Length: 285
Image (cartoon, rainbow, N blue to C red):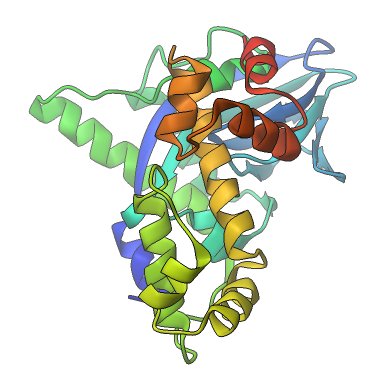
């Protein structure tokens, strides 16, 4: 299955949607959310920094902030906007942001206003409880009931999110048709399905039917990361999600994410995030 075919099996879990007005209080730094965020600015302006890249939010434009991206917010006046926060899911827990390059800004058409308006109308009372974007970390995805009406709303919401997100998708990051690429994708799926297990480069190379050296080089060509860096990145993102959305102890999260030593887990977490798991959780709250 190539990366384009994977999109046929995409699913969404909506966590919040609303239309609101923010002012100078919308000024937060170093936010790392486990949720994807979409904005449609209807009045005013503000700014978002994704890493070092500044985006000036303007009326009539759509903006995407992928999950697990470092970002900061700045509003020196006022801004009115629609927003939606949600999880994007692919088979085998693959990340859509690793498979494709994404645009962060698009000029909105009339249809995008209609999509957001409809999404808001069919999901009332799903605004965030506060304007602080750190609250995004603590909002669980919507759990739908099993009535026909709820199923219809869930399907319609997923369709609208797909229409809104699809315009941001750029070229594929991974050419799965080139020699050896399908084997690398197999190992990537294996990594995502077994993050709680011991994973070694030699084990993954054997799974892909390649030598350790060839596997490591091909893996980095496709993902821009070494196998070990990729494994740690996925484990740390999973840990962030658990720290944000559960009350599990850090030692329990470490084990769930494949770290047998809590001390080593804390060391790796701080290397990637810049703070300890406890500090990350406390700052999110």
